[in-house]
Length: 223
Image 1 (cartoon, one colour):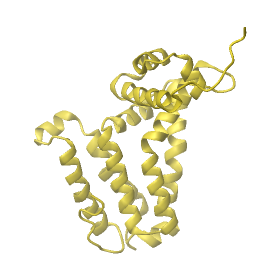
Image 2 (cartoon, helix red, strand yellow):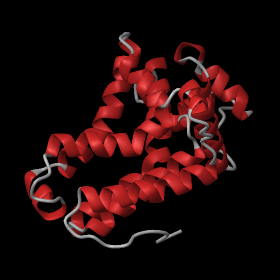
Image 3 (cartoon, rainbow, N blue to C red):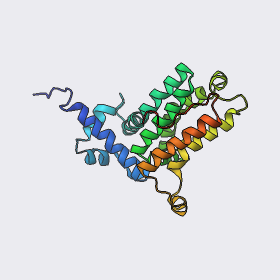
Image 4 (cartoon, one colour):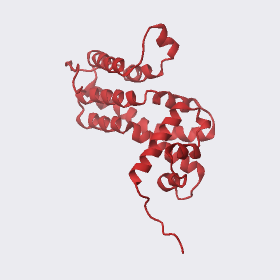
């Protein structure tokens, strides 16, 4: 008797566990040490479930691996993307502040995630080049739209240079999560949740007072 294919029981939970354990492994291990088998074993599910949720029509291993990585990446930063889209729709400095806030809130949950992105961006092998394209495909449109001329005129002060603003925002948002531990230890800084929340409010003040046209007290909003 032929077994009838269907949607597995507990579907959302199985998929959620695969994405969760994929993220944990990607951020904690060298990329070449992560495999679909290891992800499935850690999630305690049959490896066939990766093909079920993340496979392409060719069913190639590379397609499965990249499909799972893309899902993990998108779902990790989905709150950031959602808030970014609001910022573009409203052209409001308030939404841009919320964009930074949503980024910090997402990264506080997985503080090693930006280091994973950096490792992949610096790699030069073919498989990781494919993952670079996934990352750039998601992040590049956000960068391009944020620093488009019409957005610059609406949100940023007239004397702000777009390229410098881009670097400043990357520094405020990304560097704390990339800073070497020895550097942080030297300055007696511990990147725990409480410190990152305070740092977020500090960086929001720098953003609003240094780059944005309208000054407004955003301290502790949406906490």
